[in-house]
Image 1 (spheres, rainbow over the protein chains, first blue to last red):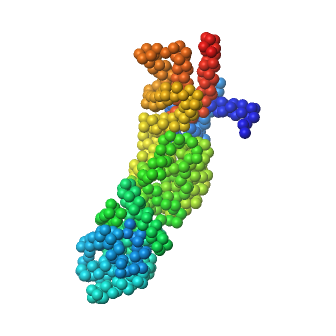
Image 2 (cartoon, chains in turn blue, red):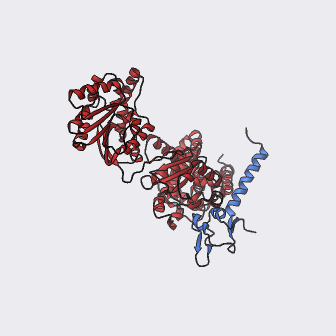
Image 3 (cartoon, helix red, strand yellow):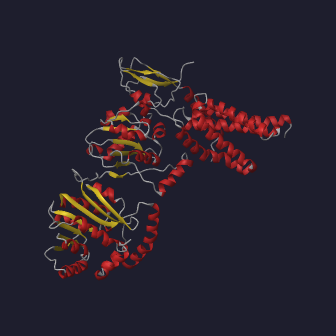
Length: 88
Length: 540
């Protein structure tokens, strides 16, 4: 049975929203919380994170390449990384 | 193929030797002669498991061996006894009625220099084979030898087919006559190595279906018994089944149901308590590719976690492969009592869904994120878990792009081509050629097209395909305006579709939903143009 019109429309809108969100997500990194565990470096398949061994922090270097997979967000023990839609 | 008649022949001991000679075309005797020539020295102690009418035992005793020969059939033993008496070898041959599984209880450890057996192991159940082999290891002196002649399944596919064809009627006949069936040995080599033997000499006859294997206790061999929770040994093999699965995976991989592997603990090679524990999902293709890369390279415990039959990255992203599932699988596997380290190697690409810290905090196992690609695992493991940057970065090389385009075409290509085939049959070939050509062209030039995602890249792909159309019109054929109009719209649609679809298959772009909205808009605009322009120009 086909879903009702309203449901179908809301589903489409939901999908549209998800698509828009996925396109716009950006890494937000709170480097003050970072204490150099470098799990982000361990798991990032794009190579966006590099360890800074002197300052014992991670460096996020290339926002454009990010595929928003969320691996670094999940693995960071300090919760210093977030995927956010930038303001404005 | 000999043993299929054995159950029947065994009841007629007098015909037994003649029958076997005929069925193995005399090759069994030749292989037995090899044992006598190569291995028998004066005064050595030999155990023969399943002596039958005593032919081999007599030959060995005549060359000076002290033979203990056991068999489970009283009629066979009676005949053997008659012959032993006939050759006056009672001093040298000790005949016993005994089941092979009991040899460990009846003889002293380290008593025999040689254990021989012909056409017996193929009659045993797999469990019994393992037990008997382990007992053989115990009964042998450290530099002793094991010599087994038996039916094996030929490695070669063609030979195996012939083997099967001949075997079938024999099997049927034997079953009708005796209500029993027999088995050939499969993968005997790995069973031998599991029991702690190392193969020294293999002599094959009858296209590899009859083999003499001479083995000796492996250096420092403890008895290798798989823990009870292990579901099996994973090996890299190519069979008809894997070929069919590959065929399916090449064209229709995106369609459920995804072929699955039963989740649980497996071994690759012969892992011990210090061997690494590799965690993976239970998509059949995932497990098979992992095994292809590590079999014969490293020994490992492989913990297959239920990922709903989906590859690890997508399963983790979709919530099918989680820390919860890994912890559960680990508990069920009993690995805590099997290995003496607490290090899990997880695929790096499941880090988007499996919370490594939770695993660490809840059950105190260290999580190590392994390489992105399975082919790097042996190097990663051997180097003591050193992961180079090349191992941690996902790439999308030409080989993968071509594979993914094929996967896309298999399903979506059908989706596009079926309506075309039904409603515009005369357009089928042009559309087919454009779609396939455009897809593979895109896969090849993908890295050089400007833009970060599929939608951006689809712009240049559209321009290129339209340029191609222009070249076609100028050089070969000046199409009427209406056709050109249709082709421009069609190629634009196919270009956008191709680029957008491959985006979801690429590890370097955001997921396929990311551009969904714009694809829908572009589709609607193209559709509108398709209907409106002919109308305003009066083509309809």
